[in-house]
Length: 183
Image 1 (cartoon, rainbow, N blue to C red):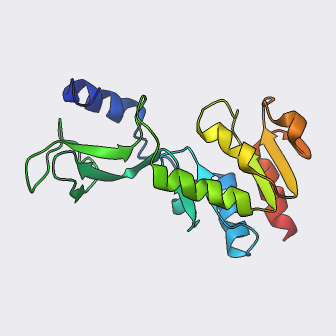
Image 2: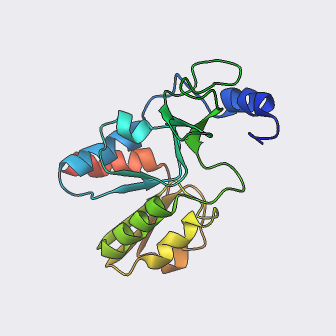
């Protein structure tokens, strides 16, 4: 854990959570196009990579935070993301700087989670893509949907398939790309 062994945490973090060469894929770009066309109101994601924003999406609710932001655990100051130091320190107070991500065992940010609930409650169409819907509490958000149509796009079955109006077994990138081309 970060507070118990910050050196081990940052070694793990850099090796397993940071992918500087990652680029948006066709799904990210298709979602940004749908948002630009006024067809998409929000993206709710468990991803922490910032690729939705890199593709041009503006309304992205990151349930598990993002590696694009960091803050000091002592004074709360927003700091630049980890620059490669062994254990990054706050320039103001010398406290440990941590990525603004939800780590295992930590609660999700309540404000972001509530925003996600509200977006889903208002939606008339909910597309769940590329998720097994097994990670809670995020998976529970589908239960808030009372709108018209629920669409699930995933390679494997989910617990919500029987409730969905349409289930597409396949690549979210390919499916969303073909939808965006119809626009």
